Image (tube, rainbow, N blue to C red; front, side):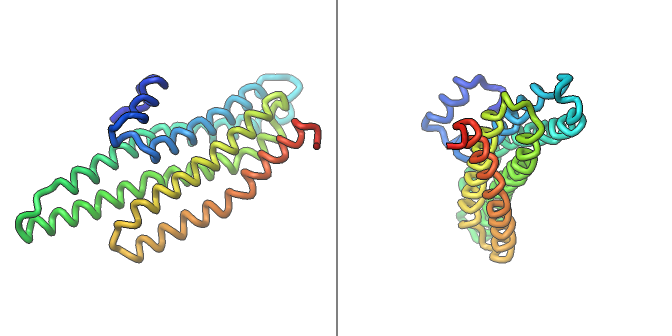
Length: 212
């Protein structure tokens, strides 16, 4: 399913419909795409300008890393819907005999792992975006600071929502060791990203509001 080839109107209409895909996982990845793009916009209003020549190389490196995460999250916006479809197909498999039941159960567990893996990858990408934003706040064009703040907020929201979608799938996976390992990864990412994202947003908001 190539959701990212739809227009904004088409995608949001599909999201609002009674169709099971796209859903929250796809929308969360798309929020991460917007976060990366906003950071890139701030960087692109910085490079090539004489007054920012001293930081141009640093900002270009940030732009490259943000572009990589944006591309990854675009892929995940589609992959989330595809993974959900695999789960649905697995649940529809026949279960008349013991062999069919075993095959169905194996397919369900495999599909659930794949479905958990997509938002897990999205949390990694969103955490990587957040890692770039404080340096961009300091070195980027100050006229674009509000966009950096929005990027931080979108990235953190996307990370939280991606984590939630990981746990939605883990709830049905029977491998307790796998679930524990993935939960630990997700929780660590949330904890590590929360303060930096909040700092970027609050610092910029304070600056815009005159320190009030």
